[in-house]
Amino acid sequence: MILTVKVSPGSKKTAIRRFENDILYVCVTAPPEKGRANEEVIGLLAERLNLKKNQIEILSGATGKLKRIKLPDGTIILPIATK
Image (cartoon, rainbow, N blue to C red; front, side, top):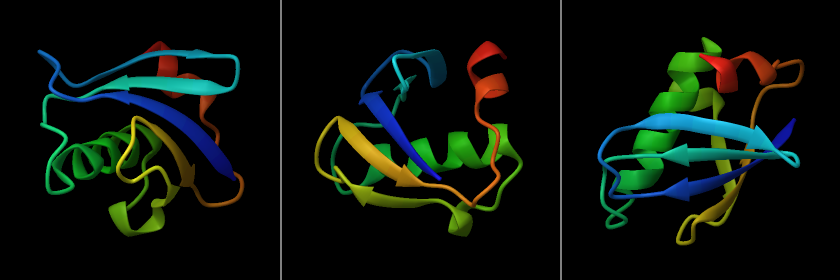
């Protein structure tokens, strides 16, 4: 499954904001340098989806705010936006 995620790095707190128009909006406290924000996004998704970090892969957008992220097939993502 491919998930589109829009990330706002350098935020006051790490949180999933909403899921709208097939895009998951996420805020992370980490700055957008040296992959820190990407690591935090992967950690947040892994925690919320009960996955291991190595099961989540950024396919594109590693240096931008809009990312395409690969999740294991069968992963249900809707509940993570409502927690």
